[in-house]
Structure formats: C-alpha cells, structure tokens
Length: 172
Length: 388
Image 1 (cartoon, rainbow over the protein chains, first blue to last red):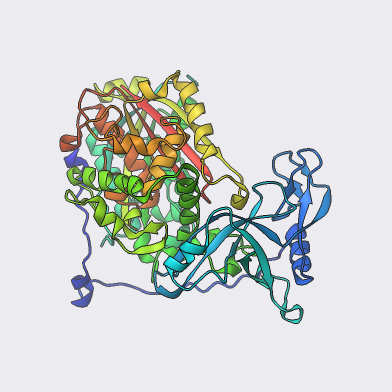
Image 2: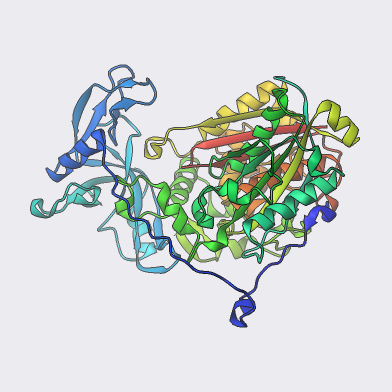
C-alpha cells in the first residue's frame, strides 16, 4: 500500500521560527444567547430557590434529571415535576489537571457524574466535587465511585438561576 | 444482504501529521487522487462523492463540504456530507455503500478529511461546544473530562488496572511502526512509558491519548459489475450498522457502549455472522484512547464484558494472535485526524484482506474484517464488515 500514501508535508517548529510558512490568523468571534427552554428554564428557576427538580414520565416511570418536557424513550410528553434531594452518589469522577487549552491547573478540578437522590437510578448530572483535597493523591484518597455527596449552594442572594448556583458537591 | 453487492476497489491516504503545510482541500485531493490511482480509475468514472469531516470549528470554515469539494472530486457530481462526530469515518463508508446498494449509483468516491491544527491555541477549543450550553458549559468542561469519567466508570466496574489498559497504547504504537503514514509510531515504547507519562485528567495520561492530526483518507466503492472489471481482488461490504444513544450522557451507564452493540448486531445480522469471535479475522475498533479499544471490543461482542483487556494481555490481539486488533496502529499510533482516522481503518482492512499491508500484514490470509468508529457525545457506534 505504500504507493497509495501521498508524501504530505509535515511542518516543523523551525519552519515557523525561520519564517518559511505563511499563516493568516483571524479570530472568529461569535456571541450567543442560549435560551434555557421550557424544562431547563424551570430547573434553573428552582436552583435559584435552592431546589433540584426532575420530570417524571408515567409510562416508563423514569424520574429524569436534567428534566425534559418529552420522554425520549416513550416519545411522549412527560407528566409531572418531582422535587429531588440535593444529595446523591458519585457514579464516576476524574481528577483533571489541565484546562481545555492544555494549561496546567494549580489545583486540580474534580468533575463528576452524580446520581441525584429522588431521580431514577443512574440519573446523573455533571458537576464538580469540592472539599476533597488539593493534590491528585489527596483527592484519589478521599473520592471513590459510590461516594455519598451533598450540594453546597451559593448564598441565596448570590444565586442567579444557573447550574453554578450549586458551587460543588462535598462528601457527606 | 440488502440491496446490490458493493465492493471497495481502491484506497489512498495522506500522511497523518501534527500540522500539514497543505490546506484541507489539498489534503482531500492527495487522498482522493491516490485512491483513484490505486484502482487505475479517473474522476469521470465516478458517479457520486461522499465527503466526511468532523466539526466545522476545526477548520473555522462553515459549509466545510463545499470548501473541501474541489479537492474531493465533487465538481459537477451528486455530493453528500456525512457527519456523526468521531463516528464519521466509518459512517462515510456506510453512506458510500447505500448509495450503490440502492441502485442509484455504480461508483462512489468516499473522502474524509480533517485539519485540526488550524484551531488555536488548541483544537480542544472546538470540543468545548459539544456540551449543553445551559446545564454543563458554565462548569467549564473540556473534552478530557468525558473520557476520564467514562474510563474511570469502566475501570472501576471491572477492577481493571491502568497497566492492563496501557498495554493497548503500547501494542498500537508498536503496530504503527510499519505504517508509512504514521504520526506517532514507536517500536520501542514500553508500558512504563505510558504509566509514567503526564497525568492530564486522571485516569487519563498523556500516552493513553491519540494525538491531534491533519490528514485525509479515501476509498473507491463500486457495484459488483464494475468492481469485477476494475480489480481481481474486490473487498466486499458484507454488513453495516449504526446506532445513536441518548444525548443525556450523564443518564447512561458509561461502563458499556450499548450503541456499539446495537450497531454491531445489525452488521452481524446483515453479514450472516453468528459467532463473531470466530468469523471476524481482523478488528479495527476505534481507539482514540487506549481504554476505548477495550470498551469497543466488548460492545462489538468480541470479548465478554470487562474481559477485553485479557485479549491484549495474553497476546490474542497481537498482529500474529488469534484475533488481531488494530494491526494498522490505529488512532494511537497512526494518528487521529477524526473522520480520516475512521476511514483509515476501513482502508487498512482493504489492504490487509488483499495481502498488501507490507510489514503490517496479518498472517494466515485473513478473509473478513470489521472496522468500527465512535463519536458525537460518546453516543454513536458505526460498524462495517468487509470480506473477500
């Protein structure tokens, strides 16, 4: 198959340093205003009030979070709002030491999928864990799949109706 | 088998590199022209073009298929773009298949291109926009998160060690040593190298991850009556399948890729395969991360759940093992220009089954291979089975 690989030209750092390559740089600036929608709009309003809510489908009997106005499995409208607890179980987590542009972070972030109490089993949301240590080793010592956690909320006057109204989840 | 018989009759590709001098359309042309040359066909013998490319945001060009089309031979031809994220490379071959199987066209040129290096300071920026704008993006997620979360769920459920998983990276980077297009081949890499590499998002370390790449790949597909005129070694499409899981990824069991199983079952049924572990001779599962190869082997029903690592540990998955897995070197070794990497896997099967894979040749005259890709928000499986 070797004849069928084109001898494409790989660029090296020196090519740029020595000015051999012409590159045009333009920023693509886009600004968007995303509407939260019907289901998540209510979800955010409830976060502002310090509550987590889900939506129940009475056909498959799932209590879903994040909530949706339609059940994607039964393909019908969901039926009722359900008040959930602000506690849950870590389904999985990571200890992330880089930002999206691969810069090192001084204190690692601990993203996790957290199954929320009151929703159907396995119904998780993405959030972060806190109060679990400052280094990889400390965090891996304290956090494990199955860990029980509780939301740490912003003070009421600082809440704005956003997923970040929960600062993080901490072990209980 | 649904529709008319369809064969792959030619394949070509560019080198996979971190940053190429060529533009996207130039890379597309390099791969497309090599694929045509490989089967001694010219563009006027091509009825339609299928173009695969992942997010427009990499190139910073919208309507990317139109942008790439001159280099992909699409001038004046019916052209379609397939896009299912990382699953695109195999999906494009499936689209090529149904264009011909339907009876609409006799010949199709399938071209997949990705130039990730244009996106600065890092192509990961493009991936920040896959997350839900309201419930996830304010948390500042990056692409590594979802892989790390999935890898941890998979490892923990089955009690796998990082060492077991790292062996996949070692195997694939070594396999790539014989690949003339490879970006990250390393014949001397050891499992310690992987385990000692920088931790990015535990449990993911630097050498668990495929690189970002520029590159393109192309295949020529033809209906039976054309294929038999073009070559005496057509590689037939025997089965295809694809499936999409829910967008609510935090509601899924991340330890098992159900959508890959659904895609595989469709492909096996179409190919008449009842015992895939005996009937598939070469596997090219999608390996953007080392654990993904294992995850996918289980979804493909080629290993029991939690047991795919044993295939690598015991050498079954080696090039000379009973079920060679990723003899190309895969995304970990050859490189990962997203859609082009998936189509590279289909091209590898084409070369392997024709006995043209050179130093990468799987011994024992393999007759049937499976390629699989995966993508979107960890939710799509695309599978193709080809044989001679």
